[in-house]
Length: 370
Image (tube, rainbow, N blue to C red; front, side, top):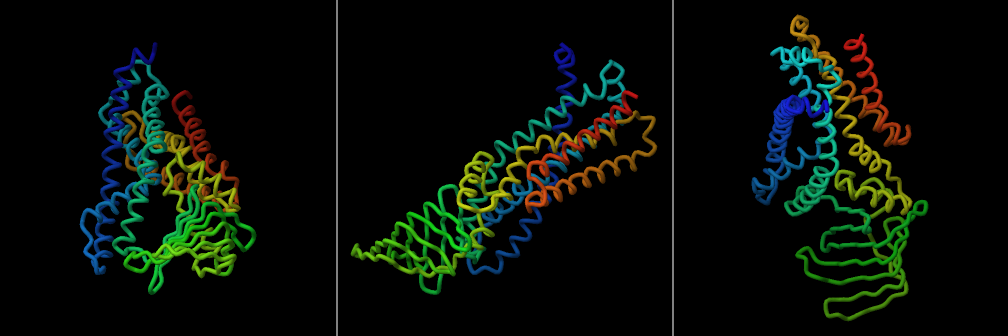
């Protein structure tokens, strides 16, 4: 009944916060995009191939999405401070309190917005970010932005493109398994072309072992452009691929959406590799609503105050911003420790938001309810 009674007020508060959040978020995103365009324009200027501005814009858009997990908490922090400061300055919070609403009641709809933003980032924006990552990867090699051989390790197997002075190879392994310093694989397919993408040969093998930059193929079938087939019991294929390179340069967590991460983590760990950084990113997306709620509560502590107590307003707002930034960077450090194996991943991902929320609730209870 209480929600229905104050439905209009709750909508007003939620919309007011969304407007402030939109302003802050697009300002931060615009700054990131601007610096990205300037940086990429300088990078592309040295390329022999003319890069269209539309490609530069796509790189800038990717940079904005890539930093979502950073910009969202900071945007909520600044939007919360801006919202509560404006409501206090216009005495609207005083009026809201006078009708009998406590801080817990008028902050509830804004917390709901924060939870919705976290869910939106997890379920919708992370798949968009994943699609953009794959799009930019293709553009990077098309316009020769990246010179390294691309390595894609996904739940569908391993793909590698290698380029030499005269030929290029596309290697696919449907299944791989790490065993110490060697790597075994099954269902190997290698396409070899010249630098103009003219087909030279196709190599198929039932199994292979990677060791010391050499791919030892077993039960090999080789087909040339004239469709003449040759068979070998064993065949050594030189490659730049190493076990360490696979582990260090496996697909970045950001290239996977929230929905794809569990399957990839399972596949990666079954292959004998560590998926801690991917699991850490998964927990970052999963617990983003808690992080946003913590940032909002921090902003409320420093910006909810009656108009008559605003003589030290600048110091309070500055304290809120610095506290929020401090909590955010502490969370990043703790998560990095979890990703490196120094702390349990689940604990490192959820501890800082939970502790921040509990501290904020304690402070609000002390100040608001005596």
